[in-house]
Image (cartoon, rainbow, N blue to C red; front, side):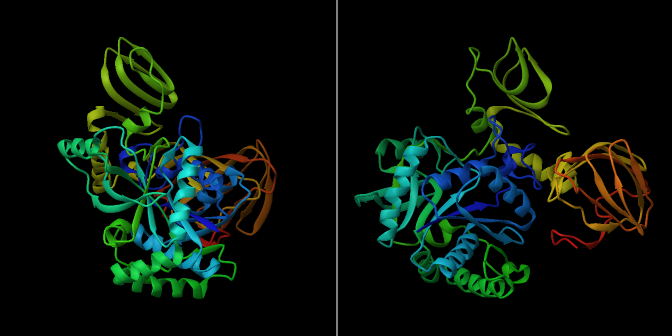
Length: 473
């Protein structure tokens, strides 16, 4: 039995302005329109997983479920929801406890980051088969990527004795200098650390107890608390916030892999990328004769080695070279490719300033659909709201704003104070401040409407929820 554990918690700050706190890297769409998370789900299914367990933040649960539905896989799925990020060791430990509880300690776990890309699925499946055979022998298995050059952005793994299906791990090495990276590659003994693993649930828990007793003890308490409030199916398990806050914030590499003498590596060359910067995203697109690349609507005039990504607007590059230009509805990034790793500093500054652009896009995803801020100013805000068929917003009230709803297409069922009414296309209703109200789509098509807000305060936190089918009340 192989359980794929998809770790979907990274913020991807180096891929701002597309990746943001409310819409992080795993949900980022590539040029083919598919998200990294969707591709990871499909990759997990192609290697023979009997089940996919997603470990993610509570806020990303419904988006993750949507991606799983889009994948259309004939594989059962479970979700383990963290109240906050605590690094990979707690995530793996909690996942191992769930797998052991549901399937027994001998069940194999294939741990996959949700934000990596693998382009050669057949070679990857072969590597997974080799890793499974080593894991069945009780090994902690990591996947090493055969280096294509002296890369300084990855950690390295030194390998030693041949184990048949892989090699014994001698040591893990942090991101090296360029000279050290050249030395590692020339030696032929080193592979890149991919952050993907395979092991028995019981074995990783034993190794945690031996090498990271504090993580083991804290996650045991946490799991018992989570199990007490979960239903018997364990289809969706929420981790309690208070207990999880006591778990050490540490990676699985530091907690176990670097300390254990029981680690094997399966070297592979399957078109792997961690999509760790805009330079990596750029390299997924074929260049023209001038080494220019475009994803979306772009024009190049007398320009060289420029990458443009623009979903909506035309971006014209004239007389420039060596640039990354990422255009979104509310923010534009212009960077030199050599400084692609420094984009995270923009996010840090935005966060320090309290600027919303680090957190959300102009279009915001909700469990029921999306809303897009079209325009706003003093005392007014205009939104385009889309509600999925059968979905419903919470029964709520606002202290400081009134709302005027105009249905563009579809049918809305509206609770407005003491009234319940149906509002069709080209019809509207007015919600005064202080009125309880709810919006629902009773149809089979998307409901699209325009919301005009007016009032002295229009922040998203002016919501009092009385009832909500998504557990947010």
